Length: 281
Image 1 (cartoon, rainbow, N blue to C red):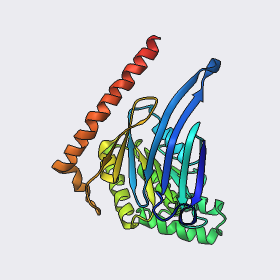
Image 2 (image 1 turned 90 degrees about the vertical axis):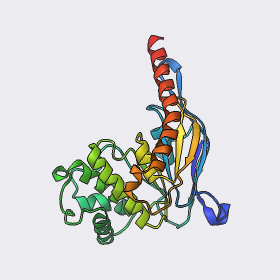
Image 3 (image 1 turned 60 degrees about the vertical axis):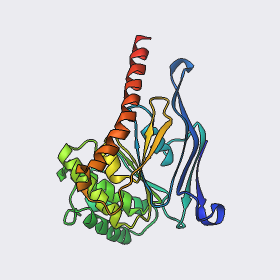
Image 4 (image 1 turned 90 degrees about the horizontal axis):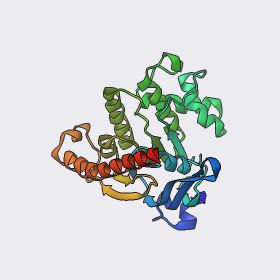
């Protein structure tokens, strides 16, 4: 029932996973004392520099798991540990599905916000913010306000704000789901490029409903079952980095997508049957 930050070198050794999720479960209390089990006995590791994509049917607890890793909620059972390689480094930073930037702050002030909350001087925080805005193709928009930005630009700001914190683990909760299909692919490609340029110095976990997105970005795809969510399968993504977006059009990509979809489809149908039974009950 814990979420902990540990000194990876002194406490657990250099081979320790960056993120360890062990026997994690989550229950919610409903009305009249009833309880709902969202997650059950989730166990897997994320290695240093590994990008893990998590897929599963709607309502299986993917986002709940991510929120617990971020420290925004606590497990009912089990433990979550994040190994800290750099003292003072932020353990996590999150990019959410909804536009989570502050409308009253300029673009550069939004990106600098987390750094300022961490105690950095305003001047230094803004220098870092401007650097990251250039990296996400928003150079020249530093003084703009969110009301003047498109949806894709707002999510670029959110990504820059998260990366500016230099987190041990980057958490992405369906960050492009609200965008149209074309812009979604553009931002997937930009994130892929940024991740590869970063030299895999951090780990990442992506929650998504898109198998194409999961495979293109991930080193590993974790499939969760229908509620209560458990890890049904884990797939290695065999494509070497750096990757090209053209990978989507290859036979090997399609074969891996079909393999995962065949298993995911069973869980989607199981979730649908469970909802129908609950409605009748």
